[in-house]
Length: 573
Image (cartoon, rainbow, N blue to C red; front, side, top):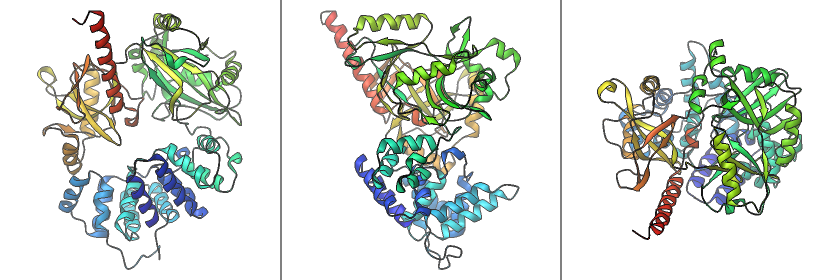
């Protein structure tokens, strides 16, 4: 793991994606089969295959106790180190004290040997599980011989590699390392749900032998926003399939004769909340993987998202709720059919196969209606279709190139989405405070941030938008997910927050509406929002799905441009 640590440090030190890919490729190329698979997974930040859905269940306290026993780290020294780094691995790594007796390891800690230990940690159960995990952590730490090695072993355990390396870059590195077609590697990685197995297949020229791992979710393909009221130059020189943009929950269905799964954007299986959809999917012949939107419907009309919220995260859905908030799965893509993976098949053909599959399905399962849009269609045609979608109660339109493949986890120009209200942001709550008046006993004041690279940048605070019930539920959640004191102290400085705010785990995403964006020194982001308000909680999104500081800048520039046009229309008055 010494070479792994040095490679990670070099990756973190460069902003060049090509250089990051080259560094990973060079490291992977030199590994034997036993080390290659776990090392490839480590670079994704998850030591286990995605398809296994395993976790270490090792908390902060277990790791700190293990380092204290192994390297004599005391709490005061750790607090000082953590304040300066804001990262547990970086804080603890320099305390490494190489052991003279490596015991079981006898030489160096390799990716394969670390993987064996991590499996033992994940398998630890029963009343002595925590003690067993701590002992196993001590064994791993005692085998570390330098600071970088220890730093990145801990980072793997915490799932916080933080070296600016996205999964797509690791896939490209695997392709480069073994001189394979990147498209073939991406396809195999999406099918297998295990980049380690794909790296081995790439090394041995066996990518065509990688089979579909149903019930291991595939990263969703994403659409890029386009501005309402523009000339829509993005739509020129291509033929598009046009669909309504629904106000629901994106969901990926995996169907086999034995089982039905429904994965949300957070890649959690939410099938229990939508039994009518599961029943309809179970009736389909053979196996398939589908992409679509879960929506609440009544009298054939899609209801606003707030109706669907009653069904979110329900383990058991009562007959009354099934009747009050019926749900339909509107399917717009077919990703796999039996043993055939369809990602590289053009969209138009995928939609044709989808129509065949869903012919005769129940009302809870329908193919999304679509129409064609030719390349020479003008803004008037786009606006006409947009208004028709809004009249049907939907958010807007999605344009998809008719010949586009399905590219998991990517937001390119093959799919575009048009909404009139671009001025909302998906933000991450980083701190909370008690309210005032009747809300003095609940946490109702939320400080939120957008993504700035691998960090978060505060952009505002909201006090309104959630119901009393939602605020009460979120208060309970925030109280249970406060940051530990040492981590909170570092976060105060990193996020430039005032003392007194309660720092919480940055995992809750909310959609924020506002009137305008202003340049401001009030927040570290350099922007502030006027009259921000919470539109809704977004439990279907991960913090990585939150908007970026670049997106804030784009909206800011669009607002300035619109103001300039309005000034011209008023004669500069």
